[in-house]
Image 1 (cartoon, rainbow, N blue to C red):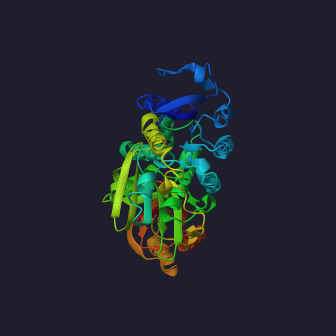
Image 2: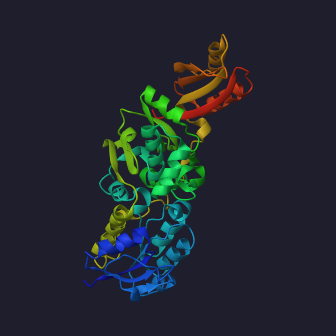
Length: 425
């Protein structure tokens, strides 16, 4: 067989890594690379500047190119470029989690109409092999639960807050200086990045279409050092968890938010920029995959793996990689459970006026809302004559906790519900 011809769209951190790795695979020829600035200095050995272009349509419209790798991220112009490449009969490899979350259904259906594949191993967990194992080795399982850390920036921040007893603001600034967080960190710290990834991951894992707009999202910006301290006292670590569960009636609970994770769980010990995904299903039970969720070479590893999967089947059949194709054309959209209807255990940190009978007054509200208390800690009295009270509840409906908060807002004893964090159980 002759070489397959590849077009790269983007030569940033990941694109540069892909170029370097592919030098070891002579059956793939990088024919053209689209960049923003041809004259930009690049420390990439063996790069022939003659194959660079500032026009990505030179790649997607080139009849000689078999596969394109889209590595620029964002929705536009990636959406338009991938759609045109599919229209022109090219297979697509992408690391673009936002595009897949927002337009995946349309693009996968369009690819099937044109008999090409879209592979996206790098889009969910960087260098961690995940999508292909789910679609192949784990295909005989009914996976019912996902518990994952899918964002290295937030995990780095929470780990540092824990280990150095530092504030969120201090650690975020340090993460930005080290390049682990963007100048505008909103996409990471507010949970958007994890929500994009979870949308696609839940869709393929549950074999039900999950819509991004139905995924509950909450970031880490409200987490205080006090919460991390109390989490440790209670036997937990705080992590930004991408969580999804589907019940026997195909009702799906899909959300991203901070969670107390028991120190007995593997996920509690995934630190700094590492990612991890725990899958629970039958017959496999519970398995955890962990490793580098981002970075030049880990992400390039997944991108190149997808390119080689296409290369090894190209020309052998008229319908390549059938197991990796979208299977949702005739499946229903997942029936989503709103966050208010979910059941969780809760950690509540309450700032209350110090007075005789104060705790009794507060716990009375729990009883009225039929919320059972698992444990209660009365912390030190502060100079302003307030006390910090930490309460862990048994399982109850989210809506009951919101009603409780409204009760507190009207109660003179409670100055503030300072924190409310769900507990993974």
